[in-house]
Image (tube, rainbow, N blue to C red; front, side):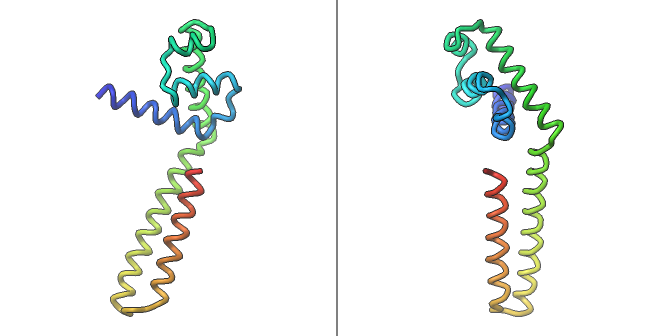
Length: 131
């Protein structure tokens, strides 16, 4: 259970960093990346940057709090999550209507082209959100 919580925290830190990391200064970015993405220990980071373990810990903690504050104020990640959910809902509703229409009008070319277009748009929206 503890490992799951730690992994979840690292994933959340990664998402926050992907979204707001450019707002950190270069020194903070390097240390945070080394900790979150390169899985360096506090001792390794302290040695790399010639600071104490406590100083490395403080920078990482401060960065985490700063990134979370950005999300709390701006809500970009939450909004993107909502857009993804609504896109999935819209797609599911359309697919249900498309199945009903196929029952009424089998082999209708319009429904196939509409289905393809909805799938293309859904994929495009999700790809835009993930980049």
